[in-house]
Image (cartoon, rainbow, N blue to C red; front, side, top):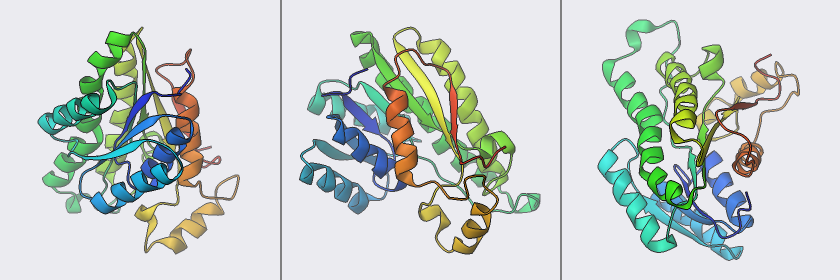
Length: 246
């Protein structure tokens, strides 16, 4: 798919992987809607960086765990850009709870992580799908995690929610074919603000990764962009983790 002049929604687009992806897409001529829930300043800074580089972008607020807010967001994007051709389901949250401490996992942890990480991706995919089907072409990339493959991660509910994202990807690929392609990029450790205050752990982890480096948000953004361009790919999990999960 030629990305020039396509319209994209990047959820959680103001920071980390979302920011890097928004900027990578804009560099290829994509008009980008940078979604945020609370990080307004970060989203607006991302938009400004894109505009300074000659691209087109808007910042738009919505809590992806709320279906009505997602629908309103997509309607606004369509009013501005005419349609939505691409969706990057990046918005996710976590809780840092040691895996073995089952009693520390509360009901609200499950609810909040599933609401954002799983249901939010479904709501966004559903909201954009009708516009993509109208044009008989569209692409969605969900951002998963190797936590959903290995069972290891920042918390048990996070790992399970990401496993659900991988399953959601396969089901959406079936449900939305043949007009819409749906894939999942599955990062390992990435140097984002989730690691703030845990840098020593990150350094130790890097030594256990075959390539002996932690991925950058730009690494992941590059793969997301490439997957969006692959017209013959759907329902696939593409891992980018430096060999961490081998």
